[in-house]
Structures are given as structure tokens and as C-alpha cells.
Image 1 (cartoon, rainbow, N blue to C red):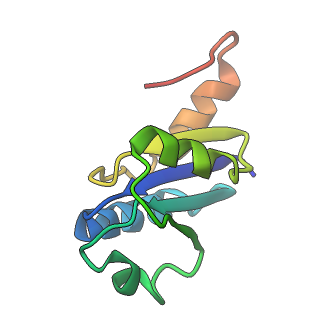
Image 2 (tube, helix red, strand yellow):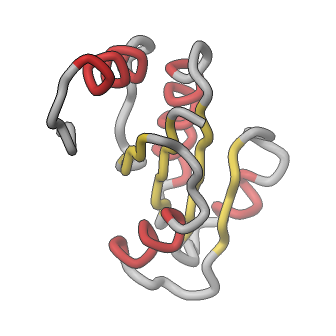
Length: 114
């Protein structure tokens, strides 16, 4: 697994949906997994995403544990060589992941990319 994309959702299902479309498109040429962790949204996110995005792993928290803890929960399930913490209101260019991975693999002494 090259890349694990972790997205925390809290009451932003429509933003997260658009984000996921772009993440999936940007992942088409790499081995990637997408993990969405929901912080007990009250906007119907669980029903909204039910049956959508079959290849996305959803985690449904029973309480809002906060942004940082939600990321850490998802990180424990991630298997990618590289980890991307992505806000749900982000739209990813289709070549973004390939370029970032290429940069990581061609640059010595790099630990993070922002």
C-alpha cells in the first residue's frame, strides 16, 4: 500500500462527498486506501454515505472525540507507506498524489510534506 488518506468528517457530508470523488480520481494510478472517520455527525452522514464509495473504509465514532483523536484512531488502521491527513473540504488535483509520492521517493532526508 503506497498511500493512506485519512479524512475526518463532522457534519460536512456534502463537502466530504466532493472530496472523496477527487481523492478516488487522484488515486486511480496508485495503490491507495481511503479512511473516513466520522465524529458522530448529526447531519445524517451515516445514512448519506451508506452504499456510496464501496472502496472507502468508514469508521463511525459513537461520540465526537475531536479532530486529533479521530485522526489517531484512523491512523492505527492505516497500512500505507505514506499517510495523508486531509480536510474534508479539500478538492485534490488528479495528479497530486503521484507527484507527491514521486517527490518523496526522489528526495533524501524528507519526513513530511505540507
